Length: 484
Image 1: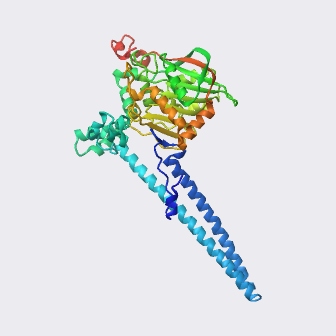
Image 2: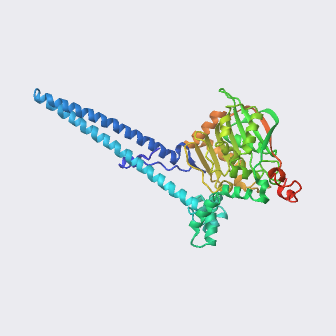
Image 3: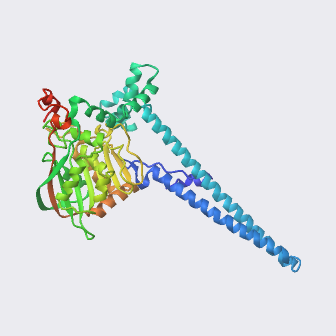
């Protein structure tokens, strides 16, 4: 994956910048910059080891030349010729080994420069200084003009930038000149400046106790057999069906020659029933997902898979939209879940998951849209790794006549399903690998067993249960309980 021209010009190998594939911008995976650098480092180690072997051969040749000196008196002509040939070989070995050492050193230097740049960028991000002032670019919110399409700003990136800069901007207005220092101190004292720290802080407030995660139970509602489209766009569209019943997830059992694979479908945030009630996928579920790593909802998901017949060691593919993607990604770092199930792949659509790092080896495909602000609400970009591919859709998303606005046209599942169709046709190496992995796990179509599972959040504890020292008859009990 290195640029051949850089080598031809006598320089160190350099990675190739991934290009956009039509209306898709691709980061990460086997074609990503980070993995290319990783490959270069492995190559540098190999070159260095080869140089060591050549150097050892040179030492042996020097020993042979030393031994030949003793026979030079007996055979001056042939001895001199042999010595000349061995000396020439020693020179070639020395030149080759030194060349390999030099190339290996150049590659390592390039990698150090890359890591240093990444570290500086991460430090600026933590201080909220990595982006230009968002206020200067607010005109990009109105319409998809040519300049906006050119720099691929979009609502997604603007939202991420605004949230990343929020502490710095706020403190800079309150204490001019001390913004960077004060923002850094604020970050340390509040447990983090990102959305996660904010959500944890809010849920700890007395009047927001209903946002705190509570245990989640799971019970199977129905199981039926039906023919399904198991391609990437097909399983994304199935999320519409999974989300038709509030508080439910779907578990699809796909029979494969090497055993069953279970597809877990988690819909996005469901509204209309208040916040903090019995539906764990309501807006309070976002607090569980981002603030507490889905510790309660993922317990319910484990039970949901068990209800659908998934046994210990079963292979799992998680597919999710919006809030559901947070929980799906958190499965990849949940030790209890990974001890019970073999999570093979995670697909998310329109989810803020930049700060979630699944266990190495779990494949991830994150779909985002440049004009979907939701994936940017965490304030963190998705990392570029071998196992994780991020695809940003750049086409124009519009509402159909009579369609509800919701969180915007770019957040619609159908937009992401159409993006998945383009992914299947792409020749980008990262996308070919990702779609091939999903197809290898699920096939393309077939009769599958679909189980609907109802998730239910436990009721709010009474004040006496949460604080044994508080009298049961305390007048503030109803107020503290929060909405049902």
